Length: 87
Image 1 (tube, helix red, strand yellow):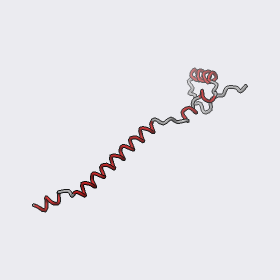
Image 2 (cartoon, helix red, strand yellow):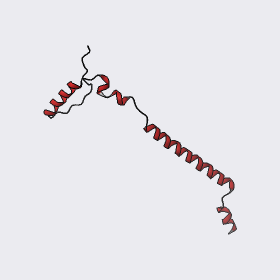
Image 3 (cartoon, one colour):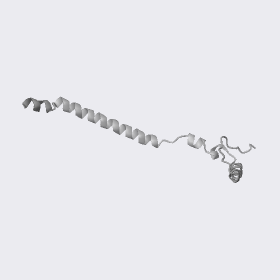
Image 4 (cartoon, one colour):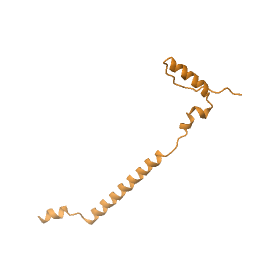
């Protein structure tokens, strides 16, 4: 019976090792959570590059084409936006 109790008792070295592992895993989890949260707040340049207004697109011509397409039940997908004429 005494041998069973002794085998279940944790040694001080084992307790220290378990506490160290818990601390490492906790700090790792905090760092991963912070990285994910901060990465979600980062802005990207490509979001503004794809907007037609940032590249001098001819929005009046786009509106005419899209209106005519809607009347003809045609779907328009712009690959290159029409550009305003250069002066």
